[in-house]
Amino acid sequence: MKEEIEKLIADKIKDLNLYVSDVYTSMDGKIKTLNIELDSDEVIDVERITKATEIINPILDANNICKDVDVLDIHSKSKGDNNNE
Image 1 (cartoon, helix red, strand yellow):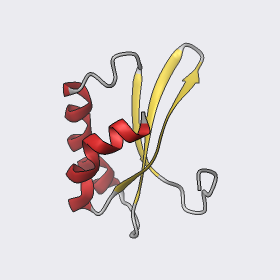
Image 2 (cartoon, helix red, strand yellow; image 1 turned 90 degrees about the vertical axis):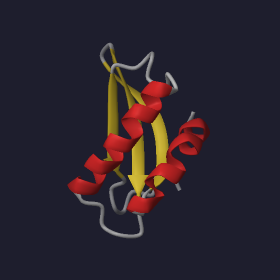
Image 3 (cartoon, one colour; image 1 turned 90 degrees about the horizontal axis):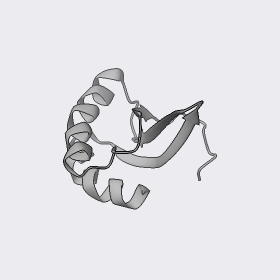
Image 4 (cartoon, one colour; image 1 turned 180 degrees about the vertical axis):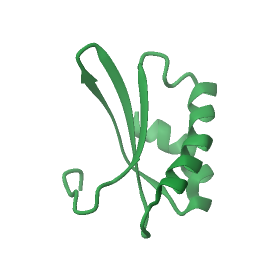
């Protein structure tokens, strides 16, 4: 799934100096969340995450990516988080 989503959005968010760090699903009870973790060589502020969300959301909707998830969570990678590297 990461490769598919990355392929769809990578070119669209590069102008924000963002790239996809990870994509994964998580469950909280019966609620399934699609997590898209973004990273950058710069500090990522809320404004850039908001702009990225405005770009990413319609792309995922148009490609029917979120059909089986309840929540879409687009967030920045926590600095010092090396779990996925």
